[in-house]
Amino acid sequence: MRVLIAGGGTGGHVIPALAIARELRDAHGAEVRFVGTARGLETRLVPEAGFPLELIRVGQLKNVSLATRLRTVADLPLGVMRCVELVRSFRPDVVVGVGGYASGPAMMAAILLRVPTLAFEPNAVPGLANRLVGRWVTAAAVNFEETTSYFRGARVTGIPVRQEFFEIGLLSADVSAEGGRAMPRRLLVFGGSQGARVFNQVMPRVVRRLLEYVPGLTILHQTGKGQAESTEEAYRVSGADASRWTVAAYLDDMPRRFADADLILCRSGASTVAELAAAGRPAVLVPFPGAADDHQMKNAEVFARAGAAELRVQDSDEGMEELLLGDLSVLLLRPGRLVEMGQRARELAHPEAVRVIGEMVRGIGGG
Image (tube, rainbow, N blue to C red):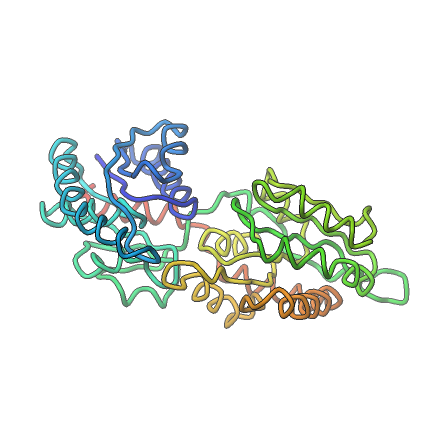
């Protein structure tokens, strides 16, 4: 079986795509190639994973200037023609679109050439590329029930997540001998690979009060590239007990970091919420307001409705200070509530996602 995987850009597209590629190669003996663009993370991650990568030229249509949109529209036919050439030369049994810049042209080419297609959509609301082809694909693998209406042949599979997240034990409401009061533990502030400016600005302003309100609390704050030094200085200036907080640009071994946390403050990208579900960890979600099609808000709303997370809309830094201080302190002082939220999060997990997606690809490819 030959499979062409198209799309990328961000880690939310590329990392699940690589998990699917490995499953197809290892479990089904497939030959897998990728199609991406020069501006995405796929240029580094795909070759590192040992898969061939073809590049096409295609730009953005959403949240960009009129000039950029016009260039993208002009480039689109050339991108589709290039993908037609790639499909004809590689002769894939299936083309898998994972969203992102290159996904649309490749899926359009496959549909024109009558090659079976599978759309993978991790977000509650599909991106533009998947919305354009949704009614013509052979099948779709989605993360949320709400997303099935956008596609033909859609199935809720979830997002491929590393097995280590599923092996994390659920929280328990431990009770100390001190007055029978449940003790708070650890807060993880996670801004993603790029960091989150709002967390880096607001947390140092509330950290001293938060540590006073929640005895014994410790905080691990991931800032993203180029923001650790200024954020650490702001923490230091706050006067908060330096033995109870740690600031780092990046964090390794994220499954261990999730396992160590009793509450996570984070954005609501598709991969992040999938990892929260797999780990069974409660969260305060602050969607990135600039996300395309407001998909982070839709992802967070699903978790909030399920009782797995608290949702807060990003406001001014001053407004966020009181909201986050209130949310974090109340939750950290209610371990029973954290346990319940973690259980609700785990109910949203899909431990068989990558296996099911692999079987879907094999099925529509005639395997």
